[in-house]
Image (cartoon, rainbow, N blue to C red; front, side, top):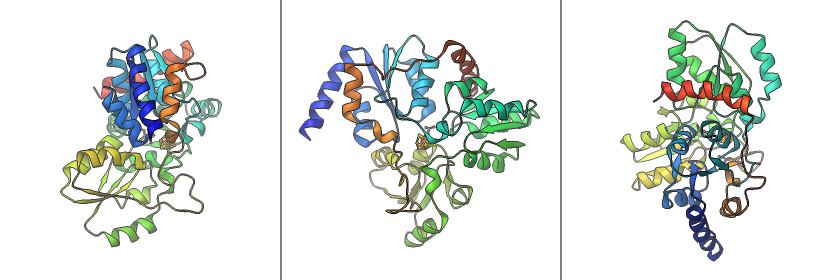
Length: 320
Ligand code: CIZ
Ligand code: SF4
C-alpha cells in the first residue's frame, strides 16, 4: 500500500512535469480509473477516449487500455506523443484479424462496404470504409442498410450477429471474438437470474447472441453504465468486464451489482470476466512509461494513418 501511494504521488508529479494526461478505459483496474479521475484525465469507452485525447491540450497521452486504443489516439493526433504502460496489452479481436487475411476476405467481396470494429490494428482500419465502436455500431449499420449497401463486417462475430438481428442488414462476418465476453453462458446466467429475480440483466453485445437474448438492456460500456443509473432496479447482473463496476458503483452507490457467471469459473476459464490485457495497466507500468517511453511509444505508418483517418473520421462525424 505504501508502494502504491508512492507510485501515485510520483505519477501525479510526472504528469504535470511532462504535460501529459492519463486516459483510462472502464475495464482497467479501479485504482487506475480513480487515478485518471484525480489527475484530470478521463475514464471512458474507446470512442470517448479517442475524443478526449484529441481535444485535450496535453502534448503527451498516456493511454491505459489496449494497443488499438493507443493506435487510434496516434492516428487522430499524430503530433502528440502517445505512450502505453505496455505495448503487450493487446486484444483477442485485434490478434484474430491479421491484415493479410482480412485483405483477402475483403478482396473476395469487393461490392461490400467494409465496416470494422474499433478493436483492430491501424492497417485493418485503413482497409475499412467505416470504423464503429459498440456505442455507434447499430446506428451506422442501420444508416448504411438504408442506403442499400451490403456489409462485410469484422472482426467480432457476436457483435456482428447482434447488429444483423437488430437491423436485418445484409452482412457477412469475419470469425473473431473477445475472450472475455465469449465466456458468458446462458445456463449459469439463468441460474443466477433465478437467485435474483428482481435483478436487471445488463449485457455487452460482444457476448454470444443467446446471452444477449437474456438481457434487459444491451449496449456499449457507456450505455450499460447509463442503464444502471436509469433503470429502477436495485440489483443488476452484469455481463461485461468487471472493471466496469468501479463506475457503476460510483454513480449508483445504493445499488447492487453482480458479475454474470462465466463458463469455466475456476477451471477452464481464460479470462473470468476480466481482460488480461487491460489488467497489464498497473501503477508501476504507468509510472515507468512516464520515466522512459522507450518501447512504450505508439508509432503508426504514415500511409496507413491516412487510410485509417478516413474511416475513423466517418465514425466521428457520424456520431458527433
Ligand atoms: O471490450 C472492449 O474492448 C470495449 C467495450 C471497448 C470499447 O469500445 O470501449
Ligand atoms: Fe479485447 Fe475483449 Fe479485452 Fe476488450 S475485453 S480489449 S474486446 S479482449
